[in-house]
Image 1 (cartoon, rainbow over the protein chains, first blue to last red):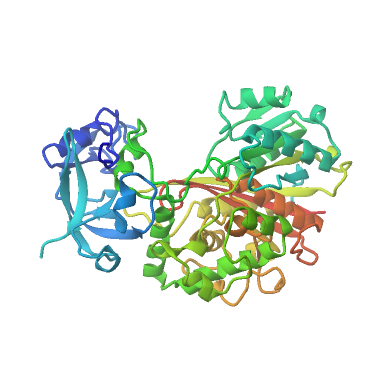
Image 2: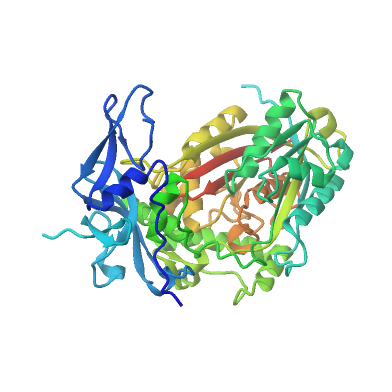
Length: 139
Length: 397
């Protein structure tokens, strides 16, 4: 029987395919409007801030902070059930995007994750795209 | 301001069983609940000219449900915004009745989430999706409980809120559940351990599911359903039970934004609409039927509806303020036992309307003496990401 895998996004979803394309090169892409400067994330085709603007793709440094998190103790998902406890977090990137991800690279997620902690992206490699996870920022 | 009384709840029914053991379908739960609610009002199928249903039963939503009930309604509304759909439906029924489009509105809900063994809270989420938001989120393995837990963590961080304070919400609803035979039966059927009134210590020492939320801060997953009948004033006056007027309504949504405040919900938008239309204040509420998917849901919503200031919910709920027998201290919370201890088949919003109507009729198991005003606030979707808010203010004659 195959090992259960992390649920992976579709690389062909219309709004987000450009983001996932960028992950192949370890680029964390986001959008900003050339008229109203609104930072847009998750990606879209239109600017939700104004009706005239065009969204320009930019690349984030991948550095940010933990806005909030929870340590999952119980999951029935075939992949995640064997990984508890693991930390789910909303990460605020320096450039503005807020993304849901996991905090990894800590010895004990129950004690080593905190709100406000500095993190940086770490790519989990997959065949057709890579997944942006976050680890403590190297000091 | 002049309070409008354009529509009233005239019939209610809560399907009694929380474990149908796979013997009855969600559609059948809806139909039986509808018939009992119509009887409660002294009305019949032939009186119904408007149907409101979240359409989660499959088929073609409103088309399927109208045929199944054998109705030819003038108004069909299948607004589907998760657990608060029924507050949206009540708001729309009031609006449609006031506009003269219909005179007897039927709201229905049915679910066999427990029988289907749907692990709503800890099931994790699906993978590939053609919805862009889901296509960005699914890889992280956020359970539904973790979503709400992230709100709780940030609330604790910003305001110093403690688990012992959140536990007050769990113990108040359990107190009310123990007075409700249907809720006690529900906990027995769902094999709750040690069914009794709880203490703060019980809650904070129960198993952690997703930090910082403990088992006794999480709702049950039951089967169930119900129906509500809403009628125009001229019909409501002749119904069997006294009318429960819809005095105000508000609707809103909220979703993640750069720099957004996760501790503040869409209720900050829907609440003022509803209280403003009704011309009343939170302090006047005798009953607060607040969607208790989790302890943090109630704390957040009480703050956002204006019962206390943002960040002060923890201290505000302390000392048993939300009990049914403390009417001078504040509103009685979820006097049926709530989603935490009575009934949560996935979308609980209809029960908020049903129990609020019971209170204003004087029919609750935890009756608040001379209850005159109630707020029912539904939260749909997920509080810590994208969610909907429906606020309904109810009053009796």
